[in-house]
Length: 86
Image (cartoon, rainbow, N blue to C red; front, side, top):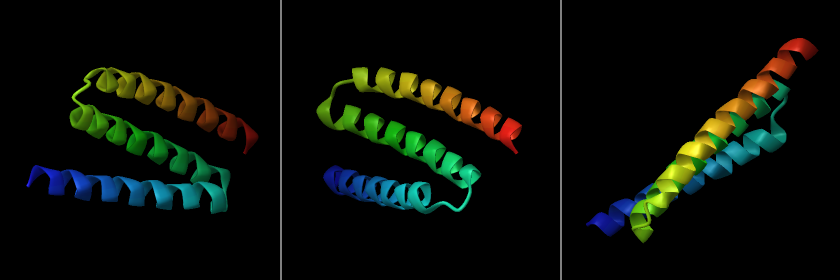
């Protein structure tokens, strides 16, 4: 039963990655691309946490936390740049 839930979760994660990547590539504005990038970092964090559970390696949770902080700082930098550019 737990394996079915893991497979369903992986399906949702990869579907989210696919659609966020499409928005990042074909986004009409830079703000859309920034939101897609932020969504991709959030989905990647969820994937790292799920992989941590699957492989029973809890160091991936620490990596996900650091990746989340760096992704947040990156989005803030991009948003600040777009604020000045507009």
